[in-house]
Image (cartoon, rainbow over all chains, first blue to last red; front, side, top):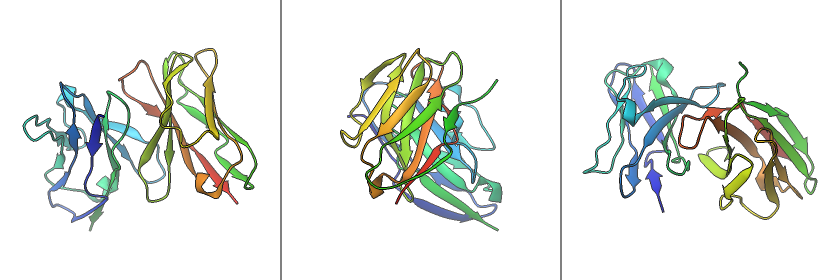
Length: 105
Length: 113
């Protein structure tokens, strides 16, 4: 079965510190992976997708086929980044368990 | 245009009652998905529709859960004989096609007393 794993349920960093939210996948072939984010009292929304190779709100994510990972990174976390983050494979729509990021002042 | 609309936004019911949750996807979106989000849990995939067909029902937790979609548009998720463990936020999402960006509704908060 195709799966993504987000090993950390909770992640806490201080403002200005780098942050990395982990996502590992178990697929054959070329997975298409996305990151979704849910801010407090807002709808779940797309943050970025790997094929676009773009940076959104300072976040980037690179598909590493050797490590089968798609970690989400930001060099300097901001308080407004506090949210729930989900890694999602668009092959079967079964999201990872999610990581709650808290950025402390 | 309007986004994905879900109704009701909140539903309180008694254990054993049936409930219906409604999802209006974005016009023209062929794919529609249902998820459940429980407190402290992640997003649990329930079912998806491509048009009016549901190719994968394996995510439905039990046979008390069913869903349908008519006219390639509105979808209804029905939970029969509700149990307290059914309490959760039920999210609907739609996309222009399979494997495309998902647009989520604001969810239905279901509370089973």
